[in-house]
Image (cartoon, rainbow, N blue to C red; front, side):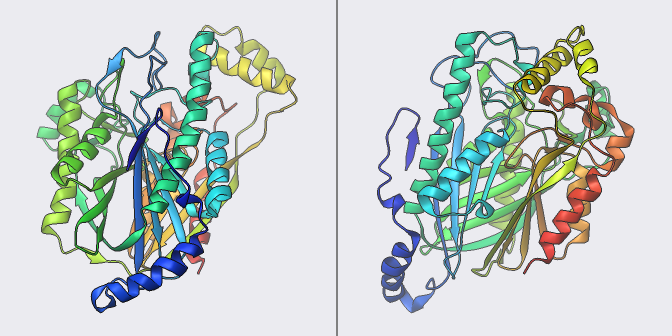
Length: 471
């Protein structure tokens, strides 16, 4: 079932306590399903909603934009997957064709999911594709829009965030209604269009470097795939990830960029299957070359082909119906904070983004919200079938984290960035030391007062390791 912002969906059955479903439908399925193949196994439900703005709005991702969107290339979607294991434990994955969401919006969504459906915050993961051709979402990337967006557009931004919250919660409710016995399998493919953007400059040289096999820098070309099929063998959902910025396009037309094209292609190839993309640790990775619709469609088809190759040619591993989740927000330390006098000096900067950040911070201080030396950084872990460990990290995470977390783990490990709160770039210690945009220059666009502490990588990896040891 698909809904849009302008449609009302019946959520009455979605509000039933989950034990009602388990107590009534579960025994019936045990009797009806031949041989009890799906009894006491996984159950899964999916739903999606069209979240394309219904009117011209300011777009997110590029500070150079000076007017609202002027059309639509593709629709934008919010999609939900609800998994339930043999012991009735549930987890919710929400994927969004958006640049990101802020902590307050994420908290509001998760609080409402908990109140309506009895699903704990620990059991919810929200991932943004980071498309740069979607709308501004609430307070995310505030300095890009502070004192730039006209008041009528600011009202549209606030209204959109409120509608998005309600739509995501309603979509989760419909996914719960859709729960049915399923099998889960996983595998890994490969797509090679992601390029380390710190190590391969200028962009114009990338085609030549690629042809000569001389591209530099770390990357992660893996394409993790989770396939979910019902009792008839029909694929109900395919969930896949990739570590690369969604920045092929920079136009004034709504689009999901290459992840949107990949999802649309998979759904075209397999009618009735919901395709869901999650963004990996691609903060320092770009799809190169770029800047044409033809390239966005091309990369989308390549990513879809990588997923299809796993589905059609690999012997995928079946996952036992066992689900474990963990979640924590750690106090991630910032470097030395600027003084009030320093902020006042920055309000006179010729850099309008630095000026906007300083004005935002001073407004908050004057409203009784002083700067903090730490940020509540979200880290979550799902373990599927005792075999796949899925780590969800907030912010724009560089590829070093995927490499180090995977190397330290046993079995299959998937690492998502852009999850639950996109508050800043998350550099490794190496990238922080090297500096540059990902190492610290980008902080101004997110509104944080300074760069991260040198201990950022240690603190994040310590919490990932702690969650890995949780039974």
